[in-house]
Image (cartoon, rainbow, N blue to C red; front, side, top):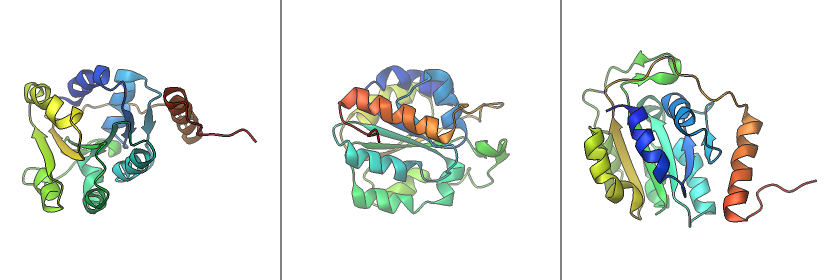
Length: 196
């Protein structure tokens, strides 16, 4: 399964979702597929996308919030699972992209991915709704139950390999913040920024 085909399937189904991507593949491919202002491209902070997304999920409990993290980022902060379980936000969906490499550092291989059980780690942390998908067909078949149903969910996307030569969005931090915030204002009618 390729991440691009997952995102191409997900993008038309993400109209209500607020998205947080991590450094590496998720930021580059989500941007390439969607050019979405409804995503916060958290390029400079590995391992914190689900924590950042949790804050958004608390602030907007009526909106689904999708957080993407890579397996390289995940192992830097596996403790995030315990925080997620403690918060147990029903609108949070955490997608772990297992592409067997540190995609943000030019596809350096991760040596342990053949025996890592990320969904098992999530279950051990107390997260009940966990799913693992190995093929695009299985992902499409399980999408409604795993992604669209209520409940805090941890979803592992096992990929064949990382896509190479990816370019992250050419947006600086303030631009990402304001694009995302203005989009939320337009979607919800709630004020994020105030003029001074």
